[in-house]
Image 1: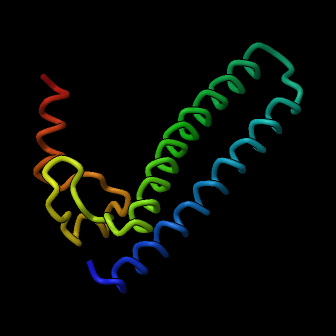
Image 2 (image 1 turned 90 degrees about the vertical axis):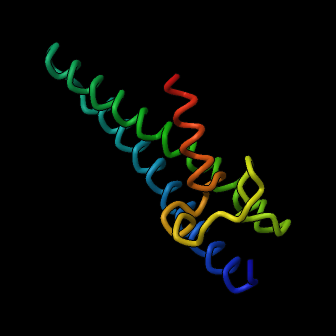
Length: 118
């Protein structure tokens, strides 16, 4: 992969990383606000608990993506970015533009998904 491509994806990954961190921080603040809002009845408690579970689920998914971004950033640093971890072929630019932290090419990703369903 060309140096200009690596720089392009590095910028995209850094921006996404910042956005995820902000999202997680905002979710944490929102959860604190819900806790401090002073639920008045069982319905309020149920609503707060539902919101808390949703925010925690979203934060968990984003934390996972953040971890994958960190791995991708490490690959950029050691010049192994864009190589499929399964077949060791280059991941297409189209796939990387859609999912810059992709670990697998489309073919290998499909194999993994089919294996998980079995």
